[in-house]
Image 1 (cartoon, rainbow over the protein chains, first blue to last red):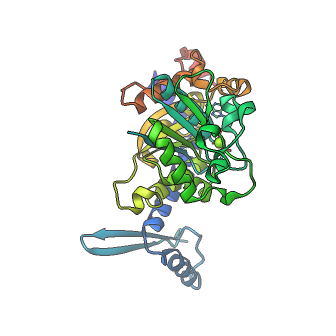
Image 2 (tube, each protein chain N blue to C red):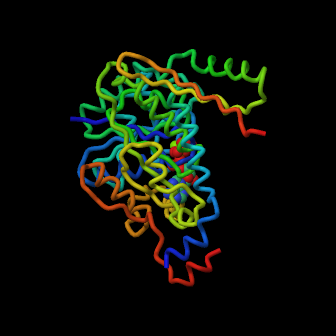
Image 3 (cartoon, each protein chain N blue to C red):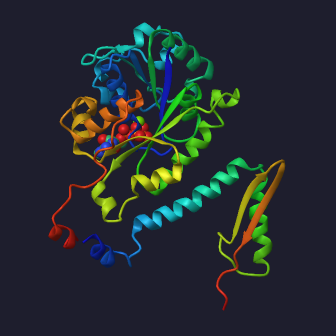
Length: 85
Length: 269
Ligand SMILES: Nc1ncnc2c1ncn2[C@@H]1O[C@H](COP(=O)(O)OP(=O)(O)OP(=O)(O)O)[C@@H](O)[C@H]1O
Ligand SMILES: [Mg+2]
């Protein structure tokens, strides 16, 4: 029975799902800026400005993630330029 | 040995004071000598929830400033044995709680009480930091809602970096999640974050889930901690949370809706 109900309900993206996805993004971002060095927010902002000289992108185009592997720190920067026209 | 427990959240109005009153009363009922301290300088709500507002003579800041001693300021609860309340001051001076002053009061309370429950003000500023700074343990009160969960995560960051334990390089203080104002019905309709969602994001141990309940307003109208309303869902959920806090294992209740018949399910709006 549950299957039928799911069938009717599943195509809809519920507002709770949207909330969860948004939270996962915000929290991940805030955690990495919390644990990282103080200059990360400024670096993020400037990177975004540089990219915007060439491509029009939204505020979430630059995702940064600081990770340490052994005694080596890696800053992963992901830049999303948006849909191909 | 005495334990200092902060009830905190970041976001305002999520149920910290309701929880402080309920947990403190529950611990006292279990025979632990408990003091509940209102850190919300300027607002002072705890005495209203505990129903002792007319017996406030001296407050936390009076004790810090030496205008009264602790014994004069502590209010003995009339309903529950082993329970004492230290009310907040209504001064507008937000800097009235100095770190040395708070430490002196907590040290003195620690000599006499098993548990010291600190009701934190909202925010992540000075008042909230003071309430958390000396804690041995934290209960993070969260509503299943985006801004509350986000603020709880920030508060967890603060607990692991800005408390005395963190600054002295000790083990981080244990933090427990208490989800309040939960509506199983709305979760089932996909309108509210579920217990699993919130726990997955915050990834700390779950102390309890308190349902959205009319009983909480009734209790606050009467000036009586909701945990004393034994018939109510919220009262029972707080009771379970206290038992878990003391190490007992109890299944979570009130997190699913009563199963409706097939028609009720299909034609639900
Ligand atoms: N489980 C619940 N069901 C229904 N109402 C609730 C519940 N928990 C708290 N409330 C209501 O929410 C409001 C805020 O509660 P409370 O004062 O405990 O929050 P708080 O976090 O201490 O707020 P503040 O940040 O202002 O100190 C009150 O009106 C209270 O009655
Ligand atoms: Mg409060």
